[in-house]
Structures are given as structure tokens and as C-alpha cells.
Length: 210
Image (cartoon, rainbow, N blue to C red; front, side, top):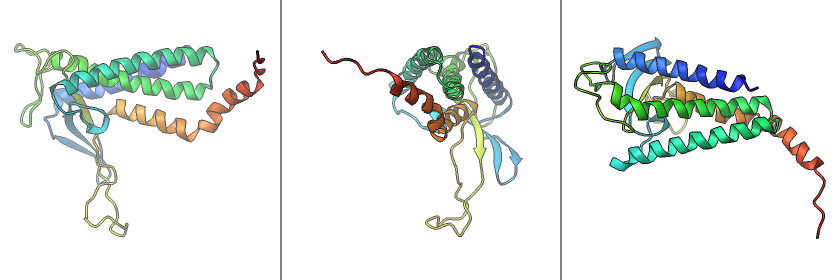
């Protein structure tokens, strides 16, 4: 178990950061590559906020969000250490490790990308460590997103009156996907993951009343 957690985290971070750096150095903003026509594409956008392009408005929103992410990573790390010591279900620990890896992946963008990359535009790709300096600064980097499902709702689906409405329009990244998979798999498997914990709790002797 002690080896599984860093392996999961490092694997997600490696795929996440390699994909983001590749996008930054090869795509202009809005540039895209069809992978499965009508279903999935790579499309480069940047966002200043949370997962799936959500944002906290205002100049201080960036600092607030980055600070929240750092605190979340610390809390999740402490939590993982605790549940490993308690012998929690390995699947649950793996899911929490996925969530941790996703949080770290997007923190890296926020902390460092504004320093190490030049500005990406609609007409030019970014440079790495440009002579003029980064496009923003420490704590103010934008998160790189590129994964986009383009599949649309069939016309017969009720309440969808416009043609071409996408089933899942947000553009996201590997870190977002890791967080989402971790959360959803916990929800799906919660009975299995928490069965042992419930059994252990029920087996504890009741505290004597004073």
C-alpha cells in the first residue's frame, strides 16, 4: 500500500504534466485536433479557475483558489496517512490518491506556468523560459485544459430543442479527470469501501457510563 500511493500520484502527474507541456508548446489558443470525429478531440484552452473551466472572478480570485488548492493538498495528504494506518480498503485509498494527484497537477499550473512559459495566443504558441519572462508570475499561472468530448444529444432527447448541443461541453485535463474518477468511484463503491470500517466500529465495546 505504501508503494501504491506514490505510484498512483506520480503516474497521474507525469501524464498530466507531459500533456500540458506538449499542448503549451505546440498549440495556439483554440487550436484543436480531432481524435475520434464527432466524439472526442484535443482543444487547447486556458482557464484561471477551477476544474472544467469554472472560475472565481476578480484579481484576488486566483490567489484565493491557489491557496485553497494548497490547503486541500495538505489536508488530503494528512488524511491518506491516517487511513493507511487504519488499514482502510485499498480501493478507497487509491481513489483518494487519484484526487490528491489531480489537485497537485492543477496546483503546478497555477504556481509555475506563469513563470516558465510565455503567453499563449490565438496566433502563436508559447515559449518555454522566454527572454522576456513568463506571461504572468508565481501563483498566477493559468490551468491548461485540452480534453473535450464533442458528442451531441440526439434530436429525439426531450428538452434539448437545439441541434448540436454537446452532452458534456466542458474542456478539462488529466488532473480534472483523475479527481472526477476518484470521487465517482468512491460513490459507486462506497458500500464495499466502508463495510470494513462499519464492522470495526460496531465491534468496538461501548464506553462505560460514569
